[in-house]
Length: 261
View (cartoon, rainbow, N blue to C red):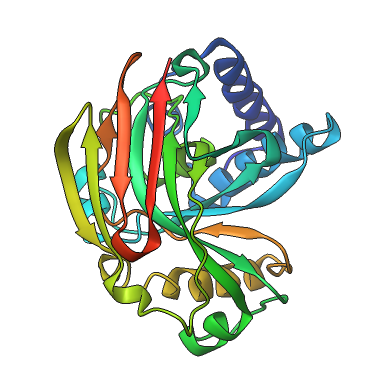
């Protein structure tokens, strides 16, 4: 395991890379013995410094919950990161591409909790009971660690590659729609690039919420009412550049648009 000094040093490296919109060498190339526990400790140091600086935490992202994303990254275990209020956009937004590194888009559903959710034995039914509503969301990936050869340790340390999210306008309670069958058609500049259905995330997108509640229990924490939970992508990531127009059609849950400027 890494020492507290090494954990703090890597967290500072990642914070500097975030400010410079740059990329650092893989952590696992420099510290082959680094563990998943080390990576969450690195993420935690970075998170706590942001909170101390005045940023407001609004939720959590879950990643690598679908076969599409696991095959795209070569990583087979889910992970999670944190989301701050200043990273939330609404549909129709212009998004400054220079704020991010290795910019890609993922297609997801987000869930807003109406009550706390706690493990260690949280089930899908428990998660659905705690969810106020689902809302379509695009995640903007923001990777500060070189992509080639990265492992889950690298990804978690880098706040699970979270950069921002774009929220849609249609909200549905879990009892209003079969969330497994929410579709998505993802377009870049009018050309379709990815399609998927929400069941690609662990057979039900809210399963990830239960998984996260159980993970949090191991760290002595729980998910709180009002938090936004990004459940993970059910398409492969789509690369975007300055000038790209993005549209995602979620069928009965409406559309999301954004432009990278």
